[in-house]
Amino acid sequence: MANQTRTVQDQVNLVGEGTVFEGTVRAKSDVRASGRIVGTLEVDGKTMIAEEGEVEGEIIATNVEIAGQVQGEIYVDERLVLKSTAQVDGTIETDRLVVEEGAEFTGECEMGTTISESKAPSGEASWERDSVRSERSEAEDPEPSGEAAEA
Image (cartoon, rainbow, N blue to C red; front, side, top):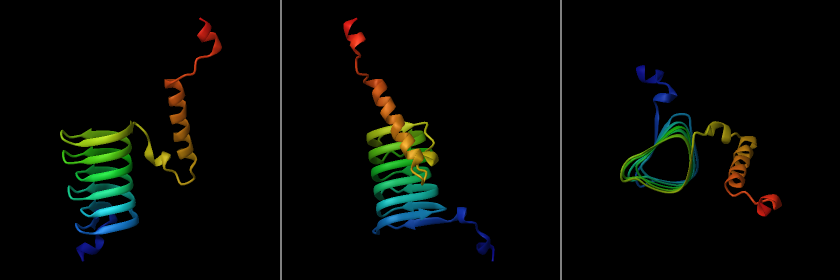
């Protein structure tokens, strides 16, 4: 009877080793992937990609710990940990990032963002994020005006 009173937060969803899942996984509790996921992983909790696990696509979660391989976009509300065996190729947006010695990362990383706002279903926050990137690009590579060129 005690097991029936467990909350969803106590549950861990597992994509086992040797399993290939294609599509979108949405979970309100933690997910551990020891197999391969091709698609989108949306987790209101912690996502763990085991050393033998692979994700090709998008990860959206509260917290993420990667020991395996990820190719794609990673959006983390709180904390992303790249374990020493992690191999990540893609884009990261997170509030905090921890990288252990030996982890491999190729791509872009943006820290200090609120991902839950940037991934809003209406698309408004996504538009805002793209606008911020455009503004940053313009600030980094400003075009010289006619006055500045003459001076």
